[in-house]
Image (cartoon, rainbow, N blue to C red; front, top):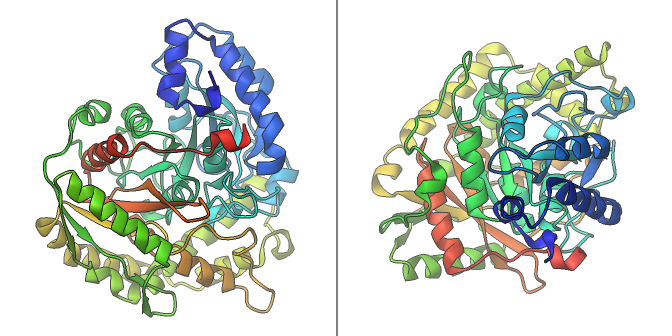
Length: 478
């Protein structure tokens, strides 16, 4: 049996049925990381001794003994390195004294944290190439990016180093690497998973956390574990089903699905996606029709408004400036310009120029756009788009020259045009691995549901997975 080919549910079954112990699973994961991480750059730190001690305890929870990685930003692991992709925090060996709510819930479910995964600096870019660490690489082609900012997590899961890994998504950072690495990636609804106990939300609710998985059932089961309001949360997503895992056991009835394939670029132009990404849409259209769903070309024209770019940047840059300043407070001194990437400094400086009325105006515009979108969800149950406008890009694509500090951001906006609007609206969205390029690179497609309807996304994704089982890169590297 090749452990690297199993999802988290199947891995947990080994422990339940007595075929493996948690210690054996942890030792095997740490061995795979040691063997392959030099080529992949997916993991920035391992917790061998702590993980083995945890594995030697009595197995409890539905995922007892299953190894997992936590992304090196956002969720906190008590006593572990927490650098957020920043060299100053890495060099200071900065740690946080307590588990975040998400990490505590994962531990209670039996998961064993074996390390931290690579991210971009402050999770800003759709890659995982922070100057603090070697770049994370795509297991399908190590000259290419696994996407980001949860790129280390995606690379590790796709390569079979661990069966599941934590990710966060502030502009597509779960869905983007899921698409690039042939995984399933769900961004939950705003307020679905708590950021307790440290904070209420991140950037007004734009950022969400969940996991990158090899199967839909893992994503659903872990959402059952993580979902729910904690006292002190500023808001919570509505509960639509008692269990997401139970929900996927029933296929959805015939759905009305609209397709929107044109993207708005940072320059304000409306453009088509790469032919491989459009081919993924056509393949998915055929598959959906064969399952009894009604599929129509129906552009969500509100996504074509060029003001999306400027409004999202105003909100995101303000939040990024806050995060850099917060990191400085944690360090005990301000972080200097020469300690971060050219883009990071320029973007934070841009954020400091956004006046409070302009910031609030950007949010009001987003909320009005959400209102204007509302009739679409009366006509259609789901929206289908490309997850990305291009196949996985080469390592180093998102690097700004000194004389054009925002160049990488503009390039990222072209690459990942379809994901950020749904961070702004708070709607759930997922990337489903249904296509490959002629060279074998994964291409995901994005489904979007109305606010609070993760159950509908998961049920359709499970139906698609049953009709076309997902393939993974594990045997390529392990």
